[in-house]
Image 1 (cartoon, helix red, strand yellow):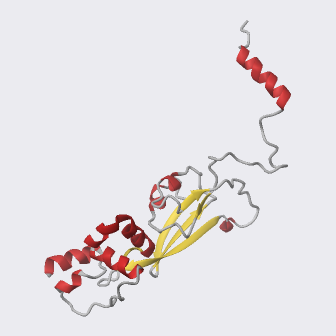
Image 2: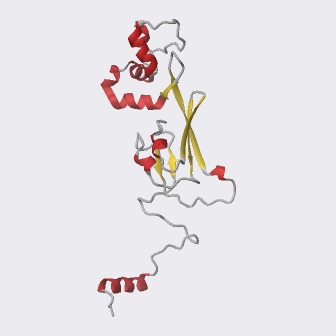
Amino acid sequence: MRYPKIRELIEAIKALVKGPYTSKFPKQPHQPFERFRGKPEFHEKDCVGCGACVNVCPSGALSMRDVDNRRLLEIRWDICIFCGQCQANCLTEKGIMLSHEFDLAITGNRESLKQEIGKDLVVCQDCGEAIAPYEQIIWIAKKLGPLTFSNPSLMLFYLKSQKLSSAVSEAKQEEEFLRADRIKILCPRCRREAVIKS
């Protein structure tokens, strides 16, 4: 016969004196630990709309779509597995964060178990293709500091955000790219053509 270890006896005595380890949820609200992984939530002020969280979501709970020069980011808590990959891979580290909320049971409409935010997109001044969200480009420009001025698009965005530059016309006047077209907000494909043809 095998006898219990001293450590197991000590734990059993502590449990008899202190009571159960479990909480009394749902009769009393449960206060989770500090590093508890609850439902993720977008923080619209800190999110730049880059979509990194969407690319790493293993369950497909996060989605992103571009509609009418707006990027819409959506999270569905009914299929989220609370893995924390979105928070770990967030560009700003504060755009999407896990909360301590875990009790998401509802008896009504599942559509209430989602959050959606929108960000304005910047479009190419030549072809009209979406480049990136405005806030993402400004964040990159601030992060790069003086290196921002090595890229014409970043330079223009930074100067506009600081109100040091006037707005550039959105319409293209010429069929062929001119040398002046290099200093425009262009997508990578149009920038390549502008550099090659000018």
